[in-house]
Length: 276
Image 1 (cartoon, rainbow, N blue to C red):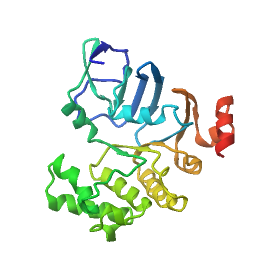
Image 2: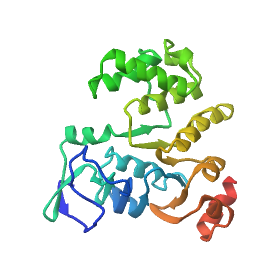
Image 3: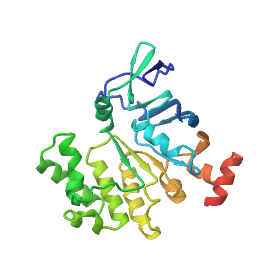
Image 4: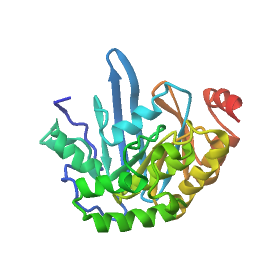
């Protein structure tokens, strides 16, 4: 949408990327977000708030809009209605009066560097070593020196338990190891928010735990995270809030132990009966 009438929302500001928000500003606010692909509406008036330091897990059947919602948060997909803010800043759009205008790609990319994203597939550069994969963005986007970027990369590789793999190429790593490298690569940009799009769905079952362990540690360290997942045990243990999506809407939300243990909506009950 190149220009549209803005929905009034006191939480959404047009502050430029990089502006600092107060400690009580929510990290993510979705206000009646709508997204369509052609005649198919994928997201229907999604409204939710993620507090700073909170872990939100999103569950639901395939095609429910979970991944699309994640991609809208960092403007990999354009919203068709409503608005999204991260740390008090409108994402992908700029407000002038009562109109909202889409940012230029370079401006949107500037915002995106503060939002880390880990995909189902690892998306590592096969021709670069593990270390080179991690230092690429800090050098190119944040203009860090190779020495500084490499020092930080080694700290992160140690954090995810892969310091000894710094000179290895992705093809020599297991899927779980590649996903841990992908997490380290996202963290190298020092994001304020981490998005995970079913990060374990492409892994063999025995490799899932090593990735979830890294994510649990991130949560314990206070990273704000939105995780699309089918790992109900992880959601129960780590999430502050769990939402169940279906048909492009939030059907049910609340404490993960309550939603998983005593769902109130019939659609939630039907879904959980098949995955728990």
